[in-house]
Amino acid sequence: MKKISKIALSLLAVATVTSLASCGKQSKSDSTKASQDTTKAKTILVGTSLAPKPFTYKEGDTIKGYDIDLLRAIDKKLPDYKFKFEVTEFTSILTDLDTGRVQIGANNFGYTDERAQKYTFSKPVVKNPLVLVVKKGSGIKGFADLAGKTTTTGAGTNYTAVLEKYNAAHGNKIKINYTEADWAKRLLEVEDGAVDFTLTDDLIAADVVKNQKLDKVDVVQITDDSINPNSYFLFAKDADKKLVSQVNAQITAFKKDGTLEKISKEYLGKYNAPDDK
Image 1 (cartoon, rainbow, N blue to C red):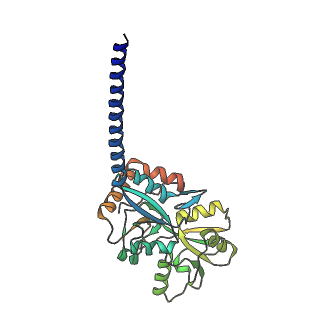
Image 2 (cartoon, helix red, strand yellow):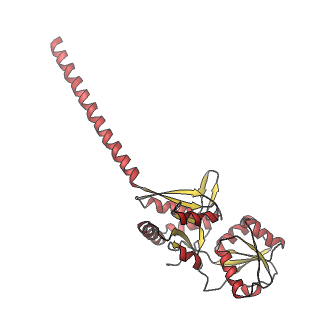
Image 3 (spheres, helix red, strand yellow):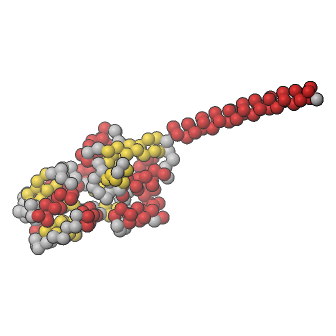
């Protein structure tokens, strides 16, 4: 009996060692595959300035907003890429695109001819037409009423480009003061009478007026077909064509399957369907 028991124990030991070796080999294989899956995805840096809300902002330690969550949703559909957000000053986003430090700009970018010469635009991600925010009773109904009026605007923005282009064509009749103040402060200056108007877009104006409880301003819609009403993501002019193509394809897919509408209603309070191109 002792001899049989010793033989049985020996066989059990061999089986155990073989099993462990087999498990170890499988684990190593799985680990290698996981490593390959991780390294296959190319990191794409996305530049954003955390303003303006509700397109990009920070809540606690979390970066949020319409542009941000839309890119996160797109990222989940693109296994070849992994998006990482880089927070920087607004004006630095364009510089970082120029130098290749970031590959995507996400900051409620509007269209300008100057930008189109230097950058590649994504498909439109939301329709966001420009508006004038004016004090109630001002009598301002459009650009024709802005002669001699004062405003503040941020350097390098599409709003500034529109104002400067208008001034160049109409004898510099608008008095432009450049500022780095946020939108809440700028709209408060309009309500307080410090400036006559500010040019912004529909969704920013709605957000600030609501959250700041501004009841002494009017939001005037601009009807000018020459001004592109959409917002976009930006890529460098020589951007990875595959990346641009896949991002655009996903924007189109999200427009069809309702994802764009869902994210829009969450952050913007309504769905302003973007133009197709």
